[in-house]
Length: 327
Image (cartoon, rainbow, N blue to C red; front, side):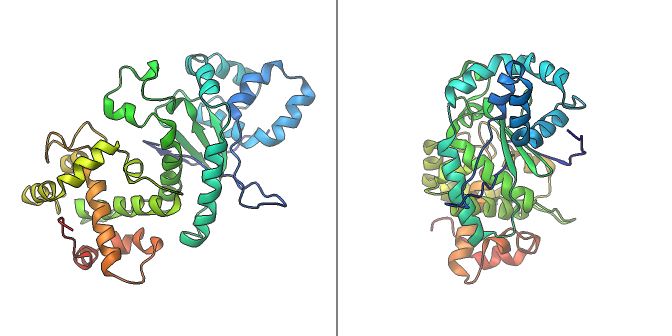
């Protein structure tokens, strides 16, 4: 197996991939290859069994080997991986929690269809499920993406016992499709900063990401698209006007302060600068509200436009949205 150089895109919530499995019946079928299961059985396979499976798993193996900095993908690398703390700890629970990924594959197949209409230029990738020792749940390397299933074992799993509640919340399998979709969009349409970047610019981009997820994911939940619980979203909806007034009075909309960016966009227990009960990453919520207002008040806008630097780096976009928090 030839070792190649990969350009990594590490996505902190999260990054992953889609694989187009063409068939005579349905060319939109998406397959997630169970590299976690394959490597769990690798040392007990005979040579012919390995050769058959290697043809399916080779790009995933190379990506995993490179990600772990193991050098060439050979038996010694696989033994080292199999004996790692993360693999030993998580593999039994991953296989118990995810006996199959049929639900995720069905959702991804629907997303693939929607991409043709909404963002036809987005690149699709091969996807392999793994167990990972790293904090990132999704990794992208060239044409391959790796999904770390050990990040989705449920908020009550013992491995997350020392996490904050807001961190535990997203350790649920229902977030897999949302994380995948966001990673896919953000890889093809990354946020491009300019020299005059303000919080408003980032809000417009984050809002466009949420709108894209809502359009692409079948029966999408706004709470899940935002990374919230239903209760957190309900609090924001009920307190939208007050939170927005505080946001404006604090001078945050056009702030260029790195500290303000972190307060408004980074995952956290709350956005305390707004209210002690306000969920973290409130910039995403406001950004989505502004985007929805823009769509309502402007015809002929599509996702590609909303995700473009020309849109989110323009003051005119906010003006044209005519956003009113009480709407």
